[in-house]
Length: 390
Ligand SMILES: Cc1ncc(COP(=O)(O)O)c(C=O)c1O
Image 1 (spheres, helix red, strand yellow):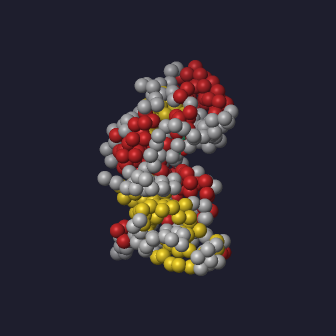
Image 2 (cartoon, protein in one colour):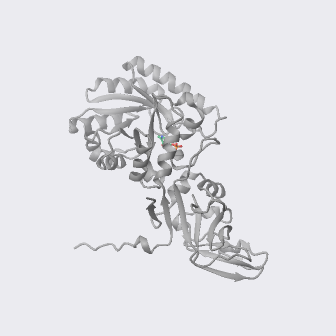
Image 3 (cartoon, protein in one colour):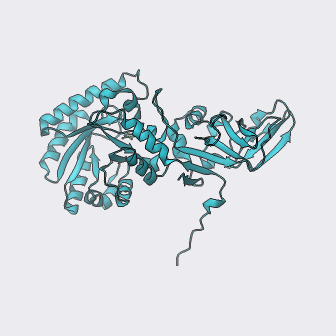
């Protein structure tokens, strides 16, 4: 007997992450516009499309001109392939236990795989034989990240082993940059130097390698010299440039809730656990049923002004006191006309009120929480229903 798991009906939940695929399409189009014709754009849609929903993010990016898709997990790559995407897909993060069981399906589906060690090469080779299909391999070089990737001094031996294996086809050399979001950091140039000399050694060993790629969003925006054959933007597709730029990008996720109640309080009213906030004057407090279990960062407590859509227009209101698991409190001000049921924009695009204050951004929450917008976007929890704007 199986016991059905009761699901919460998303229509009954107050909190929504509204995804605008047209923003992803437009951002992708803007980014491809920065590339030379020979450079392809691989849309990075790992981590469920940075929290936006992998399939709709991928669809939107392909519509905007992405001709590759990139994901960390082979399971995500297979899901993309099964959904019918015909552009090449690259996957780069797997461990033997799960990969052994499914890598042959990945290869059979024609998905490109990253290899950064002899053990990975052997695993991919076995999978290719099972699939009876050559594996398209991107050799990953560790140029300073210290994560996946072969160390430059081991590259020749790995490449020679790959070259000797008739089910392995080396299609690319690639690396990942540690510090491209800080254009003044010399680490990027150091990595490029190591990458270029490694590729030279690689080509000396196995002959020409068709593709090279290393640029993430930050390098795409700031280092045209690093675009090479493919760029791999993630965060910029979703509307959060990781560097200062004049390139116009639109946020693709808008997080909303509604006021649960509004009440008048006197001066000196404490708010939330630990009483970290006290009202200075009589004011109105608004309760919003969204908290850290929905993905808000508790460390951002008291650091962001959100937008409340009241009958008399959009108004900014400071989130005050500690963020709780399920709720936050806004200081609406003594003259606020906000009422229970009014929409609250936590971040994103408060469409429909062009002259009113802009909603905060994922970057604003990141700054307040001492983190990065990547974490803000991917933290929006499963309890928040995703809605795709038509
Ligand atoms: C290997 C790889 N390439 C590209 C990206 C995209 O980076 P960004 O979102 O900074 O553009 C990521 C994400 O961290 C990544 O892991």
